[in-house]
Image 1 (tube, rainbow over the protein chains, first blue to last red):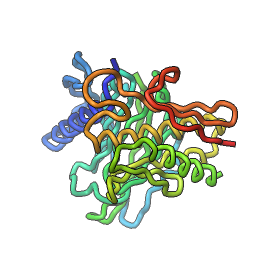
Image 2: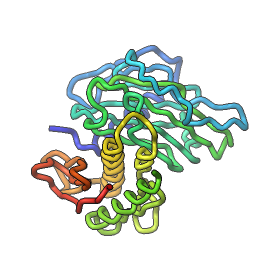
Image 3: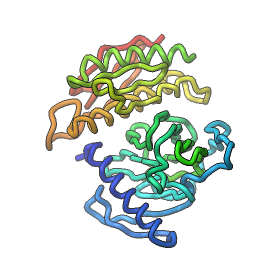
Image 4: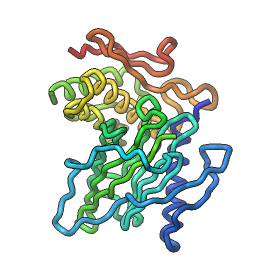
Length: 175
Length: 128
């Protein structure tokens, strides 16, 4: 039976929070194992580069002009965190094949402000977010098929720091 | 092209407002759909803008992808607002009925659940 989306959403946020705490508490490690709330079996949660980084003051990053070529050598989307210097992108895949994702600044006070996100599968855009709070969503298995390359392009303006942040190229393979 | 995404947003909002729970509403804002609880914006989806992209996909494929993503985003918002399943009855039991759609001829068919036995179907939308 497929896990209801709301449960997957809650698990994703909880897992994301735990990873953020770990990143803030000490040096980043290449990988860390954790029990997945999305499955009865423990899975390995992977941390790689690709999260949110600040732009130079006055520089506005763009979602256009991104390299849309899918890189088929990425990690699994089962449970992966793309960390940047300012924020992280969390991706998990439920047993039913739903790819859930969320993007959060490490300092939650920096989350308010415009967010623009392009959700890509195999280099093609499949979703778009334009909102004033930290984005999270899920992509149905019909769209993010097993073996496809999932990636996110995000830009965010923090009304607190008054600078723009952009995502570092990232991507994973849907399990 | 963007006229199509805006028109589709308006028609989707009209269909969804026939089935969303009391107290919630869906409003079209250009090519985006936003869910409101009363007058409070509780989220939404701008996925219909995909239709305006120029890439190797057919228009039909982009419409089906964009509408499925939009409905999934709207479903997420409503589920979070209700803290329960939607559409259909809340509580443990059968799988959550997932949104899906398909273009047949010049009509966009939309449903939640299994295509052959949907939990709910929305009135079709003309797309050409």
